Amino acid sequence: MGKTKLERYEDWEDRLRTYLDTCAEKKFEYGIHDCTLFAASAVQRITGHDFAAELRGTYTNAKSAAVVLREHGAGTLLKTVSACLGRHRHVAFGKRGDVVMHKGSLGICAGSMSLFVGALDDFGQPLAPDDITKSREGLIPWPTLLCDRCWLVGH
Image (cartoon, rainbow, N blue to C red; front, top):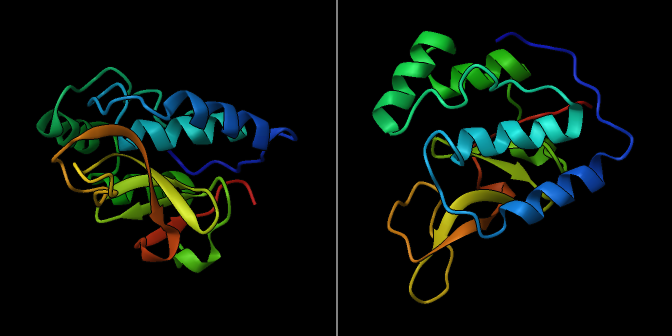
């Protein structure tokens, strides 16, 4: 895992839209469809580069994910993403397709809102990306400006 110069495909918007459509109601599952693999897969659709190739299929819960990040990443999720995508920026610089983080969860910027693998509560309101109580799972919008950091992807 190292920083790679990324360039977006010419048709990156269509590729990203198609990927997000397939994830719209997909349930969270460690090692299959979690915040890390969701963001890495989006970057792969946009640029063709898979930063998570050596992580895929190597963990099944939060504890084993942490072990994998220590052994194959840069120690933590934050450090691993920074090692792959470079220095993080303020979220105000985020544009569609960039990776964002909110309270330790990764998502993809979709403009004024970012998308996270998450859930809605029983009243149909989005739960914070770090809230693990689940009602309806899938991609949940969260205001981009309420995210903590942003990594630019192929600008």
